[in-house]
Structure formats: C-alpha cells, structure tokens
Amino acid sequence: MVKTKEEIREIIREIIAEIAPDADVSALKAEVPLREQLDLDSMDFLDIVMELRKRYAVDVPEADYPHLESLDSCADYLINKL
Image (cartoon, rainbow, N blue to C red):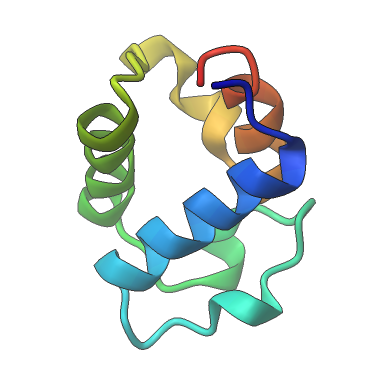
C-alpha cells in the first residue's frame, strides 16, 4: 500500500477539502505551511490528523505534528507509514 509523494499530497488535499470546504486546495503550494495558506485552526489540524488515523490507520503521535506542517512535509512523513 505504499503511496507516491503526489498520491499522499492528494490524500491530504481531499481531507482538507472535507474539513474546510471553502478552501481552494488546488492552489496549495507544497512547501508552504498549510496554516499560512489556509484558515486552519488547531481543531482543523487535529481533524486532519484524526481523519488520517481513521482512513489509513496511521498513528501520528503529538510529538510528530510539526512534521505535518506543509503538503511536502506531510508526504515525507507519511510515505513510509501508508
């Protein structure tokens, strides 16, 4: 079930689109922190993490949350976990 970096970015975009339906996920820059590009609060971020856990059985400890800052950092972090 190994995913490519682009597939993981697309998964994150889909999850963000569900959590923040007004967000333009097609315009997200891969290297820029998501919270700088989107109006995400800490609860939205937790919802993203919870959705990853629910859909893909990915365990993301709180200490690893900084690794999920941007699309690229999410993909780099998750590539071996999916």
